[in-house]
Length: 227
Image: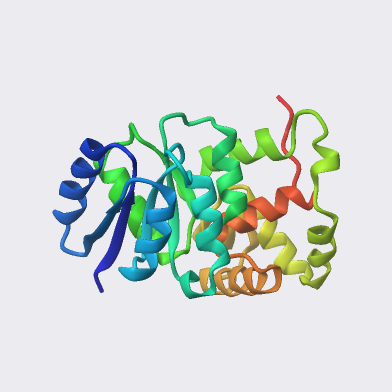
């Protein structure tokens, strides 16, 4: 199946470079280009995009607002958003994850990393740049002024719906571990881990693993180590 990719960036030259790269792959194609967030939301629906490569800073409706709009639209539930950022450490990235993005990637990443990110986001089975994403969430969700007050009590209560094993798996997911790594740590099969992850996503209303990580930190289930 061909992955339908939408490019959302206000720099035409950058969009052109991404288009050449994406269209060179046999399993993906660029189905549209947007120069602002509002256009990205419209094209995501019109062009039936699978993955949106979304810049954060765009004129008018920015990438953060556009990501939130895509995540809130039931008709776009299948769309995965990958945030493209110039800065690896950026609180907007975490806000985007909260809004429903599947992960992020630095604009300076290698071409193979970008293509891999598109495939991973399309599959919805793993975080993009797990260690870096985990680090950002740890820094901006669980540290800093008022971090404890920022935790979501409603999400903490929703964790009550999880079984003990699902909580264990969620902690491992929040640590940036893959299904295979979690299976080895918990001495179960990767298929069993995948089942627990899917059940946790369903119970917590998470779109993908990136959302599980956000919930794990916001609910207080996982707390980062303070260096």
